[in-house]
Image (cartoon, rainbow, N blue to C red; front, top):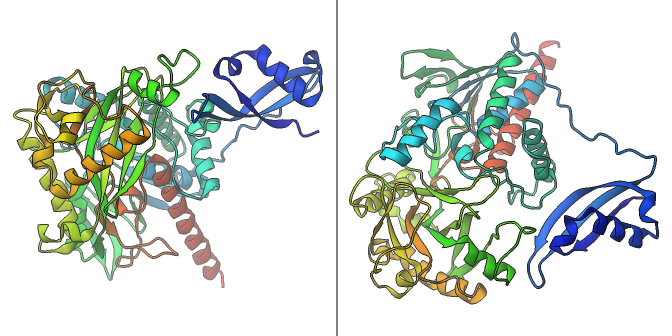
Length: 525
């Protein structure tokens, strides 16, 4: 008998062992006492009509045991093996390093920012004293932006096998078993730091290296091949194979690559605002009840529409979350969202962003490659100029934004540095503000009560993806300009989020390992 089956449970049922056992017994014509145990294989919330859980579970009968399906990864001792330099300790970089340990390659990770423990102090300074360390912040440091960006673990990637490997690796290094079950898995920013430290420990235990406070300022290139990395502190790394996983906020890297004649191209991306509602309001809209109760998670939403041929959509929605200051330098205001594992903040926030195309910002730089980047900078500086002081973010009540009027005060917010009342409808570029207004009205039709003066728009959500792509070969994933250089992850323009970045890191190491195996075979001829 295949003892797996799909069930639909009301919220209170799924948390009652007796209720679940009764349903299994009924479905399979068994007695409850015949069933030894069960485990949930897949779980999702369906709130379209009556709120319910869609569950796939497996059960065993008396005298049987579940087989241990825990993956045991084969991490090798790589201390004396071929070296791969990895620039960046974010999801792309760290997962590339883990792939190296499995493939018998020695990863040497260099990261401009600090370790998790040191990074925490700089994050605290941002929130308490509005001081930004340009090399250690919400974007730079161990774990990259992913460590302080909620830890949602779903992707639009169709490569389900790779997706599963990423989840299994995260689970191996300390993430809850729930991420292997939930349709929309989530770790939480309170749990991610320890997972990143566990990954670093494994890299070092296996003979790899991790170097913090190591900023790359140039590349040594000979005959169109990578030869070395030059650090700001004067150190130099010999390098024949380099995985460039710096993230899309490392803007200086693009300019360095351009000077070294590495082929880049500008691309479309999206920008907008972050919208914050009371979580209770989103719960009532999505679950159609006054209180969600203890059996349901903080409600989320995923919403998209087309406005004048452009997509406008929610991005990085954080139920029970907080808005954070994601700026990486002075004179800029950038916001993002995150939530902890319990998602117990009284607020829900999400980026609401507008699709932008290269022709929208073609006049922002003489070099078209950098036009999107310069437009991004301009919007962040406009946000800062409208913030009055420090890292206080410009904000406006959502209803007032839609109606084009100045707000009379602001409600409470999760954004620690504080808000300042500002007419975002007036100073945001027309190509963004006009489409947001139309989209918000459409969203309100689908989610009655979405547009309200209890909600606020906060500026600006600008770091959704890279405005630049580092061109690489589709087969080898190597730069088309420099042999041995492998652009990777969000910063290279080939990923968008923790999982897709991690997948890209895994795939690049697969290509490097295959190339080395091929070279070894030829060497024996």
